[in-house]
Image (cartoon, rainbow, N blue to C red):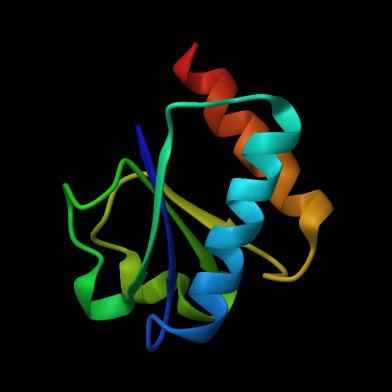
Length: 91
C-alpha cells in the first residue's frame, strides 16, 4: 500500500504530513507501507492508494478515489485517527 500527502506545491506542507504519517505508522508498529508527497497536479489515480490532503485543497482532488481530508494538517491526533481508519479498512 502507498499513502501520499498532497499540497499545492508538493514541497512544504505535504512533506510535513508525509513525515507525520511515517511517525504514526512507526508508533503503531506498522511496516511495509510506502509514503510519498505530491503537488496537486502530480497526484493522479494510481500514484498512491490513499491521498491525505488539507480541506482547503480537497476539491482539487475530487476526481481521485480514497482522498482523506484533514481538517488540520498539523493535528497529529486527527492524522493518527484517519491513518488508523485506513489501516482498519485494509484488514
